Length: 129
Image (cartoon, rainbow, N blue to C red; front, side, top):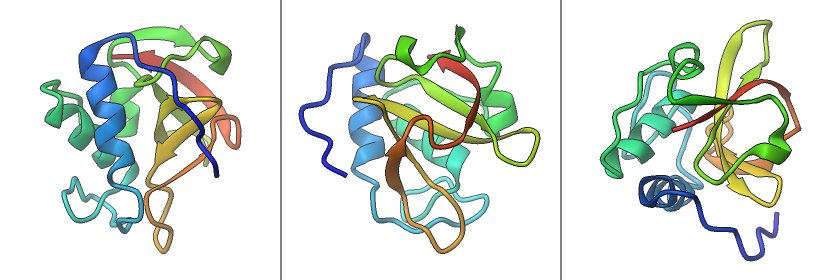
């Protein structure tokens, strides 16, 4: 996916988290992993924001209550926002919005950290950190 020129995040911490999360592309998914060599979805968010000096809760369900709500319309998202997805009927997956309709995420076993279209899965909520 050609990311083109990505917009800048609203805060320095969010911008740093975006850059850190993107730098993890290609690293393997491992359930429960928080980096730096492997990640699960929420572990990637925890790692990226921790490197930017911001503490996040550990799970995607807990991250669904972090920060402030942006709603469910991804058109209102800014780089660094957490996009919480309902994959199996619960708030069980998270990605980080990076701009241009794209998130970076750790998808599942056998699939490394990568980008995807923000609306490829059912969005539950978007949270601004």
